[in-house]
Amino acid sequence: MQTARSNPELLNFESFEQITSLPEYRPNNPLTHENYRQILGWYHFVEKQCCCVQRASGTLCGTPHNHVWVAKLKDGTVTILGADCANDKFGADSTVFKDISLAMNARREKERADKVRSLVEQSTHFENELRAAIVRVRQARMQLDEFLSSVGHEFRRRIVNMAKTGNASVVIEGVKVRYDQKSGKNTPETSIIKHTLGVLDGLSAIDYQQFLRLTVEMEHIKAAFVEARTSTRVNRAIKAKLGYHIEQCEPALVQAEQLVGVVTRFFRNQAWLYCFFTDDRSERARLAKRAMNESGIEGSRDQAKAWLTQREHELCRELGVDRIRLCR
Image (cartoon, rainbow, N blue to C red; front, side, top):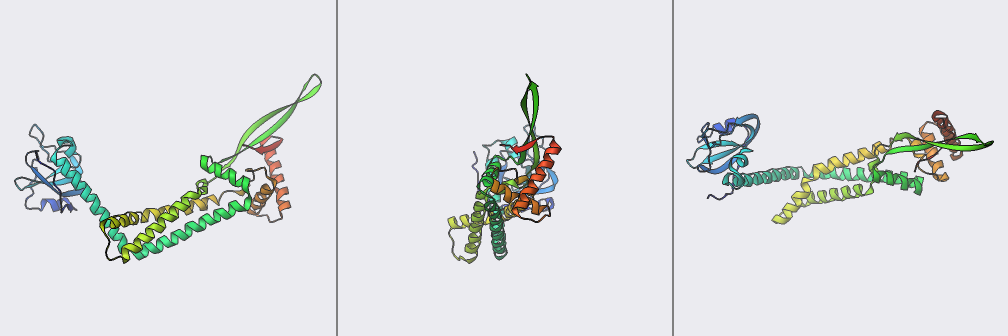
């Protein structure tokens, strides 16, 4: 039985014409267990080509594929087989399948090495991009910290809990009391309605750990770029480690922009909603002032309290209830 062999110089054919121009290529050239020799390379393009694996009946597979492997036969001629047909027609224990597995690994390694090389060639650009992204991420987190610290413990506890559970809805309870005369006495009966004031956007920004993880990752990537650019002799293990970090550069930059965008969306939330996060009078006063200012009205904290009371009265009339309380 044949054993799988390595393919030191796999070719990436960019068009089917490159395959057909090979002197050894033969159209409709049957490929079998017995006549297979080795994998030469691959072709992946929009134009589909028909697989030349020979069935037990003697006919060719003929299945059209966008991705085909180019194989050399024992007689020196060249043919093609579909990417999925190696396993379907030959089985996982076949030499063809094992050679294709080796070829796929070699292809992925080459693509990875090419990508890392391309990134390192632009090292200065990406180092600057990472440096700027780190600053933006840290500033976004500082902005969040300043806001949360400016309100108070109860508010922070509530919004952190909402972020952990993923529940972004701000819900209040409207309390309505009516009196029912029984045996000459006014007996109070209370009914509760729940009302959603709104839904917070960008709530996931509250997770502090994601800022820390991303910042540390970008620092590692930046350091890898510097080492890859400045080191003259790097052993294989270190090279692989540097390559791993460098590969994460573009995804990390995208993630940084997304995270800063989430923070931006968080700060677009109406401060009015935050007034129903806590019973603490001092915290509610701070939030009421923020909400009042946001509505275009300047004033003191006492004026903000009166403004919030007025807004609550209007909400009670709108909901047809006597008072409003927080929904726990």
